[in-house]
Image 1 (cartoon, rainbow, N blue to C red):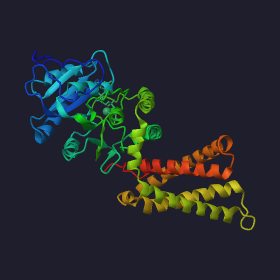
Image 2 (image 1 turned 180 degrees about the vertical axis):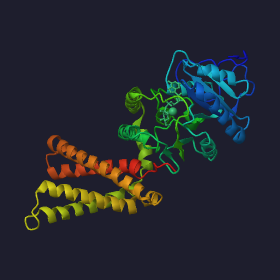
Image 3 (image 1 turned 180 degrees about the horizontal axis):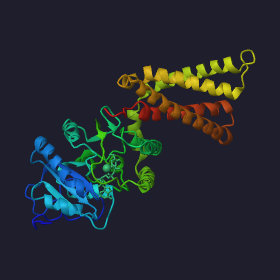
Length: 415
Ligand code: GDD
Ligand code: MN
């Protein structure tokens, strides 16, 4: 490989993962201040990296010519991705390459890249073309319109995943639900907290000491940065062209560790304050009213099926049927009223069915939570079954509302 000695590798920063509020003075680089720095974290992306740099250059040369840089941060890939990237710097002068040989990991790679970045806006994109580069222009325009952060999301209009296995979808959604429970003030602020494709103003994260583990850099930035308004742009997570995903069960364990640590170390009061301020109270009240109608339907059907003066069916069978009819009633009203603004954009039958199935699963999980909380409160806190039941219904209603808001009435189909 003929590598020109002028294409020096970028020195790897050490010390705390903190972003400075002013771009660092980079040796040998004349024009310091630029608008946008895009980090491309790589591990074994030899066959992708040239294509990625070429396409990104075409797009950014068009939208912000001469005012951006690309920084490949490679973790000493055995396939020598860093060397291939280095050989590109002659043809792509805005490309810089960092080869890390000690520290490893996707999130810390991104932050080390941001530490040497010169841009006023800092971004990250995968180095395997699964994040469509053309979405960059929409993200940049959101920042230009005043957003502090712009996130490419699979779960808003125009979003989706091309062909993930049911397992990967389930794991991704399960991880999101877990995050909504442990860290609502962070996960609740974006529709796709797992996204690894976003950009943020340097001023919004300058000075914060980031301390991520694993893959979820976005959680760390939202959790520790000072980010007021977040814009989202839909994108379809594409098929890999070359190589394979490095996600293993280890990333899922690291994710839970990351959530708990972030929960313990960030001032949740501030975050909860932001969450309460942004809490869709009107929608929640409509959801509560619909839930009340479900209680009436449940009671009426239970009476018709199980009362000695009517069909006198066994209680459990009657309750299961009554409960399911009540859930169906609630779904219809929520779809037509509480979340009408979202559902009217997804009118296909398969989309409705998908929402109904999700609603059902979440409400049945809510039923289990209801029973657990009822027993917990009645046996350990308030020995009055009706007060305990009210507490249990309130907890289950909040669970049903919050998780349905984030998962059921969201766009997930590939456009
Ligand atoms: N430097 C470095 N170090 N780069 C890494 C490492 C690492 O340890 N592990 C992975 N990468 C790079 C890969 O080379 C690729 O460019 C990018 O990070 C994403 O890695 P993949 O293994 O392809 O992840 P994925 O496609 O399953 O998931 C990606 O997209 C999701 C949706 O946005 C990741 O970005 C996830 O974090 C993200 O949730
Ligand atoms: Mn990938």
